[in-house]
Amino acid sequence: MNAYIIGGAAVMAAGIIATGIVISGRSDDTAKPQPTVTVTETVEPEVTADEDPAATTSQNAGAKVGEKAQNGGAAVKVTKVSEADAITLAGTRKSAGDDAKYVTVKTVVSNQGKTSMDLTCSLPIVNALIDDQGRRFDTIENLYDVAGNPECNTQLQPGFDDAMQFVYRVPKDAVVTTWEFSEYDLENEVTPTLVDLT
Image (cartoon, rainbow, N blue to C red; front, side, top):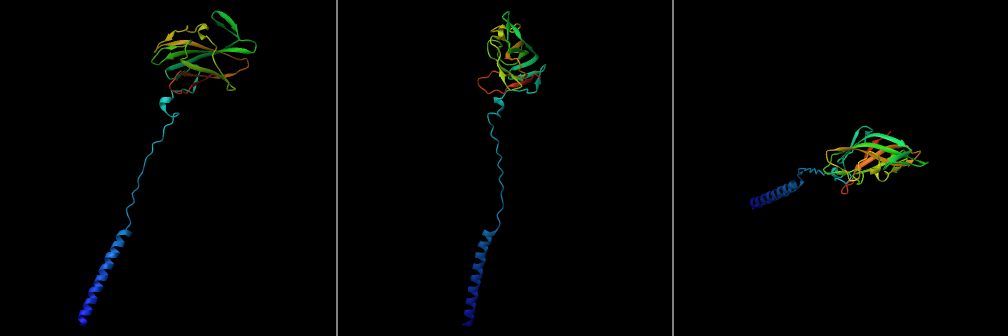
């Protein structure tokens, strides 16, 4: 009888131990460290309109008189800058007035684009004369009347160049420092090219 009790106790003890092993085995499984997986995501920076290379034409901000500067299909070399109290327009001498002067920016324009340019009656080259106060001046009207300029509707064909004078009427005490130009473009915002006149 004692042998049965002892044997039964041994069986129960073995069962409890076995159950403990299973339980501890389960808890060991959940407690095991899991491998760490690192995911690296590369994010491409967004391109803004200002950074889009297609929206900005080539620019030569360091150009000086005598150097060729590029903007889109227009390559311009400023050859000389002169000031005068009067200029000749359509064969007639015209005075700037007592408080003003004319500044003439003489250039050679090369058409490196795909279509022709009308330098005097159209607007293939947007430009401005800038003084040391940051004031911006537009050209006088009817540049085709300036002696030596191309006539109205004379088309500068791709691959050719022509002499072109941009004339401005400015205050007599203005000190001009910079000439700015860009190829006219309706579809894109064009960054102007600057030419140092000092």
